[in-house]
Image 1 (cartoon, rainbow, N blue to C red):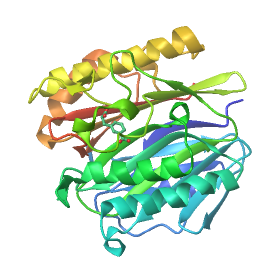
Image 2 (cartoon, protein in one colour):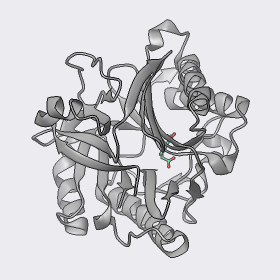
Image 3 (cartoon, rainbow, N blue to C red):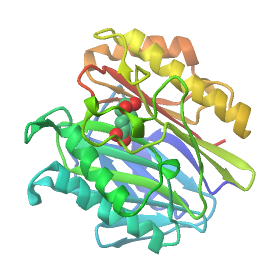
Length: 326
Ligand code: 3EB
């Protein structure tokens, strides 16, 4: 059996879900957090969710979970999978690079100590991602901080997790993750230069992530697809044209899905079979046309949420990520 599955559900079920010991993780999307939750299984992403009624992301475990807080990390786990999150208040640091370093220094040794040394998927929510700091775009400072910690803990390229790096307009630096006792399989996309090999024009330290990760949970295989944008080679495509950017992102995702199916035996053939899709939209006014276009591509089958957020290159207008849990 698979250790967990991912869904979206109405936010009105939150209290009920927190009473359920099989809920491994509950991710809420609120630009301003109502009140920080005392439950370590709950994390809040500081992004406004477009459309209503708002949904929560729920990861449901096959068995009851154990949860707690250790140092900076709030976590929950079952026998096979570990979820955790860290929020860092940048004001306590000289800048985003140091804050990012601090977050990753808390995370990297944590999962190993818990017996889950393999990171499968990481989400990074970065305040003011396109702003400037010390003469550099803040996303690049974030990449430097993350890179330094990955290097210090000798994280090999082929073990880099799938990831998302999205900008928020408020709140703390938030990092949440999924880790396992055994390694996943890294997928790269032949249409794209691997992010960890981007040339230096995108920043002094390249972004540390894989395009996707396949995890075989005793025969039941999951696919975790990174934030996927309109990038071919290493260059952004379709400047100022949001629908062609969306189409290019979907093309990149379909390439990963095909590879996962054909070469790694993941039982997914199309975008419509994803368990969940998140679409990050830079300009909320583009929501309607993005929705219409995606609906024409995937229909009603795949659950989708739309979040208003900034993207790690100033010229990207939309980014899409997906999770397949069978
Ligand atoms: C890209 O392909 C778009 O820094 O963790 C996508 C997914 C992107 C993850 C990250 C960045 C990250 O380069 C940006």
